[in-house]
Image (tube, rainbow, N blue to C red; front, side):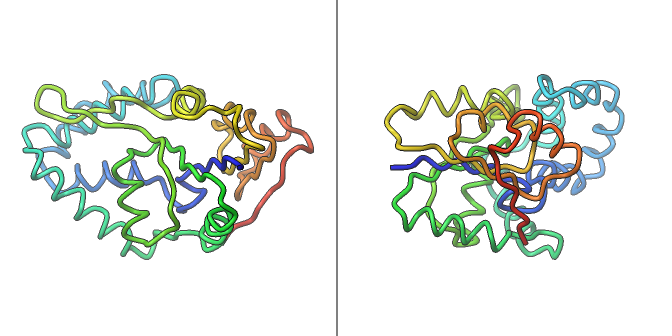
Amino acid sequence: MNLVLFDFDKTIVNRDTGAAYVKFMVCRNPMRLCMCFITTPLYIPFLLHKNTKFIGFSIILWLATFGMSIKKVVRLRRSFIRRYLNESATIIFKDAVQHLQSHTSNADQVVVVSGASQWMVKAIFVAASLPKAEFVCSEEAQLFGGFICKSHCYASNKVKRVRKFYNLEKYDSIIGYSDSSVDIPILKLCDRRYIVNPKARCFEKFSKSFNKTMSVLNWV
């Protein structure tokens, strides 16, 4: 059996889903938008570095959800998913769906490993009727009346979380798909690597790490 690891944002869907959710939650309320603007100096420095990005995201998410009941947060999450998938700017790559279907048909174990929160990735898979997959993603938790990022499945943390849930020694081969060079650590686990629609800077980093041991896919 093969283990197939898919990134989500800009690999399966063309956008940053977590950023779209935070924007949706903040912009719906002028007071929360104002608070996020005022506290910009607090969280921006954290967002600039991959090791502290989750702290900046947590601050914004907390401001966007503080004082809300769990029922209201769940209702707004559902509303976000509907709106997100209905927006013309959101594209689920047809080629990604075909590859997911192909691996599922091959009885491969397909796992989506994403920095986006697990609830949103799962919800999009269900709402868009995407092929069956397992999920290892970031998680949210309540803290002092709002939500924060409890665990950030990003960069080298993806490796830790995948190793936590899967025994990599039992698979015939490991296959990975990603668009971003921050996924180089997890792609190093893979026997086959597929780079999806890479930007020039990312492609350069991929090339330095993998040379010819990767394939580039141009997905639509």
